[in-house]
Every structure is written in structure tokens, then in C-alpha cells.
Length: 72
Image (tube, rainbow, N blue to C red; front, side, top):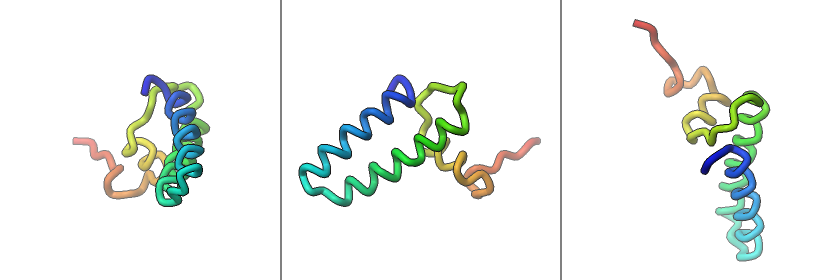
């Protein structure tokens, strides 16, 4: 994706398609991803790049071991 807005729009389209197919597992997955993207966008309004799943996770869970940054 080029931007977070493109990713959000793509997820919304895919959610509607998954609902039409009756694929509830995919709907739940995409809704969780969409929720994370929207929260990331709220926390970083000046940043328009499409964040990786790790960036979104660390934004929502900064104390997680995977997200710790150590200075030398």
C-alpha cells in the first residue's frame, strides 16, 4: 500500500466482500486489522505511510517485549 488511507479503504472493501461470502473468520481478522490501523492513524496524524503489522502492534502495546528498544 502507498498510504495508511489506502490500506484502510482496501480493508473496508475486503470486509464487505468477506461478509457477502459468509467468511466470518476473514471478517473478524480484517476488522481487527482495520481497528488497529485506525488507532495508529489517530496516534500519528502527521504520518501517512502504511505501517507494518509490527508497527501497529507496538503502537498499541509499547511495553511488549517485541517492542522494546535498547540503547547501547
